[in-house]
Length: 276
Image (cartoon, rainbow, N blue to C red; front, side):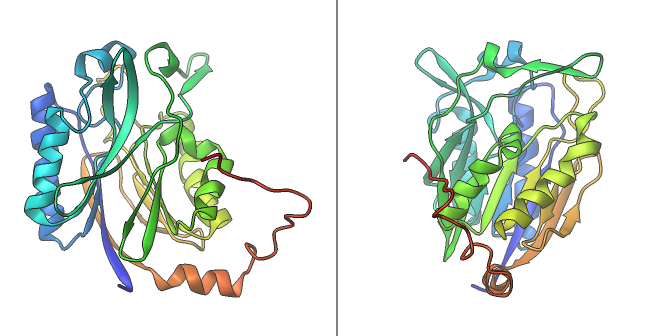
């Protein structure tokens, strides 16, 4: 496998959870029709992004209705499906979780957001995920052929150590379902995607909900894919949009050979390790 066709699915929310799921399934089928093998949904695609709503829309993974619908369509179409994120309930705790389903509908892995979005820019954006959600405690990867892919969620990409840990685990691609706000979005969204790609010489996908100014929390939009040179391969606008891009998997090895920063790290002076 020298190339992989990837779909970034930027979705509008819908009035009900069932309608959100139906909208996602329709776009997943369109992505398959356009040849995508890996399909990625945005953060919190089946629920309003609201601390008051997380509990009402939470479900067990993979037994809940959203997981069952995604597993079924992944098996039906024979695709790898990154299920964006949705609120997960386990016992008394809630998590912001990204599940991944394989081409037979099996749950390959799930990632719970490690760094919770607690931010306060007065008059611009205030949010406190930790008032409703618990943080995850482990990394998550999956493979498509020889390509190893790591997972993060939105706020996680502000922590370069996390991406570097995935680099050490042999990942050549990172996926961040993300709902950035419209204030920090123009300042940092593309910059962070390109920086994580360039620093780690890997592909980085940022997949956002579409922008809806009528919601309590307004997402930035502008889903994008960056390559290991730090270039933007494709970019959405603000509305619901399906992006399709082919990534050249030979590029990672070529860049690591040409610019061998990974071999030149001074492990005698500093080191980073994932504690799992």
